[in-house]
Image 1 (cartoon, rainbow, N blue to C red):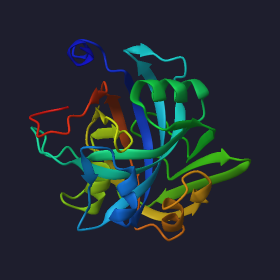
Image 2 (image 1 turned 90 degrees about the vertical axis):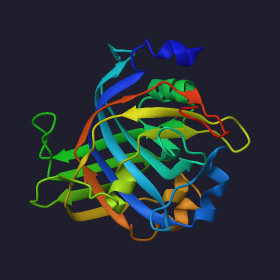
Image 3 (image 1 turned 45 degrees about the vertical axis):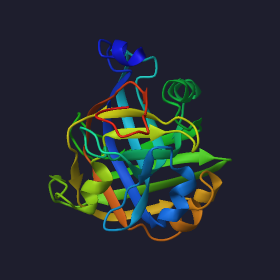
Length: 260
């Protein structure tokens, strides 16, 4: 019933997504198996599975087409990559599963958990853009995201070079990590929920320097903590875009012809 009605409703969540920063590590595919919802499988690039620590800034937030009480905030999340086991009209619909999403506002976390069932938690999360942006589409030279968990501040940052942002090359690791337009969640053995992300292709900036200070075990536990103590396999800084997150629906685990 909701699926039919939602076609006539505004998107539940719309915003400007600013300065997405992705630090990615290779991880054993078997290590992710306990976290994969029903009907999905770990998606790989050239045989390797990846996890990504992502920071981004939301601004001009709208809920059901109406400006939200919290118009802007930062988020830091850890995600990995999946695809559906059965192909439909959108192929295998490659997307992401979130291990944890941190936001600074308790109401935002509760609302997102209620709507999408995602693992949000409320802690202090902030950003640093240097120099500050002068408008949507402008890009700072340095982007940093921080959070405070258990009284300890953690963070990661990147500085860009002089090259203009460019789209990811088709078939590249950059494209694999950023061209994801589906979200999934659900514990193994329980129904899986899915939703679609609508946004244009992101352009990527050349990263000249970067740093990370993160004891991942504090928030994410194993197997992620061990992997994230190593140097990341990829560091990407994107220009971001306007984006809309669609209504969630239940994923069919049978061969399908469209969205579950």
